Length: 392
Image 1 (cartoon, rainbow, N blue to C red):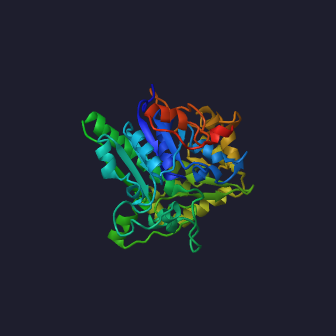
Image 2: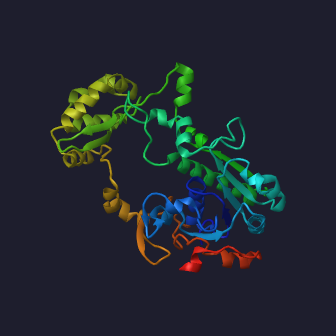
Image 3: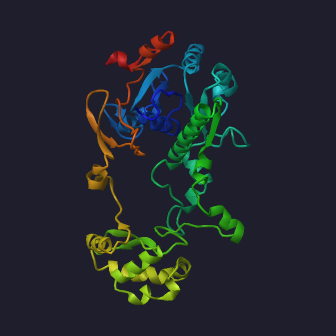
């Protein structure tokens, strides 16, 4: 038995934020029916690198889901969606605010149709406020949430972190909201409710002490490259082979072990460096001492010494490092997944890991409309859409 077995989810969203939330629920047993436009499907099917015409990203994002082809812009598609929602526990959408209402599928209508329904709504700026109708993508949410300003090297142009982190953070906040709403409904005797997630707020929620530092001191945190401002020492240090050792020696006892390992007893026993605030005041001196030790050594030599000294240290992983790493493999974080056409591909494993009700991969990402007929027969609405599965 999985944690969400028996929970029925209708996923109406596209691309990243809504579908990532759906994928998270599906990994733990929820029956997620993904509604896609007939003929073209979710645009993610054609994003980034394609194999045999389909994005390999799709295989991760849509595993464990069923696909139904419906045109939500038509009365027939809207009627079919209502039939599905009568029996659903959760509906996920990440359209521009007002879109669902224009289709007759807004919250008021759906709550009247199914009072137990939980509605997850993910948008750029939320369902209220002066920006609600502005189109918003993850890159804008990351910028407005404060992350983009802090990402990059000092004095250089702010950069993106390399992935669509704003969308993924919103999906995780959304999945958490669904679980809270399910608990309220099922354990506390409540009804369904709306979960309103904004991309920029999901990023902003992760911004640590950014606001109180500004309020208390007028401090505007700036880009700091590989260092962790206000916490020392934590940085990336060059090695003789061109690699970088990531060393986090910011714990008080860890700092002493680090200084002993690099042969700096003067810094190890300096009372002014016993706590973080004292080390921050002399961070340039400490960083210089550490890099003077790492520069003549290879990355592997540095890591072996620091591992023996029980100092947190590591390297910057490439994807090649990841798929061959014994820790990833031991914890089943790289798994072989079968695709709908019978081929195989390596994909990330399940997170988080539950001891009694673990997540698992039940079936591959579906063909477009693969389950339209079976779902229509189950719910009683006529399936008119031609599906990709018809041509396989």
